[in-house]
Length: 416
Ligand SMILES: Cc1ncc(COP(=O)(O)O)c(C=O)c1O
Image (cartoon, rainbow, N blue to C red; front, side):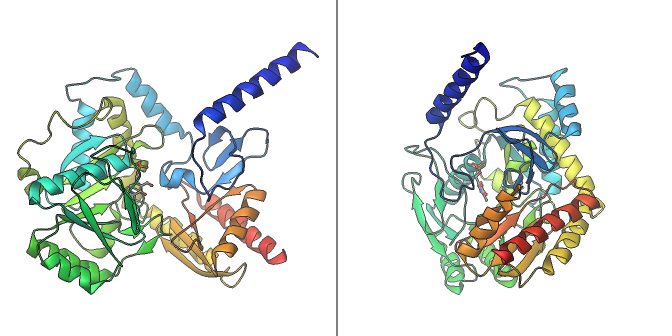
């Protein structure tokens, strides 16, 4: 056996060990079994170990790499920042102050105040803690099939729930779930017993489901009357995805609290933010308290990346680029209705959902897509929606390329 072969085997063995050590999760929606190793990425494309042909990545970290993979402008921003200031604790930085200012300006809460952290579930947990503190109530309202994140088991202050199943709630906190559109929920809000209602303006994990617009307006009015906080979880669909900075803008409703994550760090830094209205802020006398946050929650590097991301998104929104590309793609994909059991095409800016007749039709589509080197994802309470999250920076010809690829998959599914 040559030395080269020995080395190769050793590396493979090491990889297997590494994989065994870090693979404790079981994801029944996984496209690959076993999970592949990602080696390289650029723009729309992703290279997996042992495969020279790249994959067209339409998942993009569930709307995290919104400028595509390994974006050059973002890489330059990281490198520029690292020549000036990397990390400090116990003090502020220009990038942190500027990002807080920009987020407050762009978020539809009244005179916003901003807190940063390093993960979506963390700022959702914080929003819940703050709501308890302000309202002195400890019961929450949330919507069925919502997703607000997972956090560490056993953590007293962690919060995670998915639709009707909730577990590991912070001690003493309770949550009641209702369907979007529920009149009973509005009555409940008016009973003045609830600290807050959490909504995703479009339910991301549930396949990009909109909320009934008039109902949400009623919810917002009921919240005002009963001093219940309205929390808009924008972690997946906020930051420009739907064609407005915050996705809740589509309803003309003003929340008290907004959470951002995923795209805020551009896919290169785990950055999240909580934006609260001034009146909420003034009701929290000791905020921001030194008991909050973690080592990296105010990272100057993270905030500099956040500034770059927010400014670029704002520029793209100002020229209507996200809406333009979204309607181009949805116009073309709509012609696929009736093929491969596609029943509906719904586009919210560059958040695009294809609904299928049932779960197995969606699954078939995802599997054929994977075989054609296109990464898509089936989701939703019924598992019958395939969600596409193209980067905001695609060119028109890339938008057509995506539509061509989806069209080809639909034809292949038809021929099965
Ligand atoms: C709407 C929403 N909220 C919260 C989270 C949790 O974010 P993280 O995974 O960064 O903790 C997610 C993650 O997918 C999400 O989609």
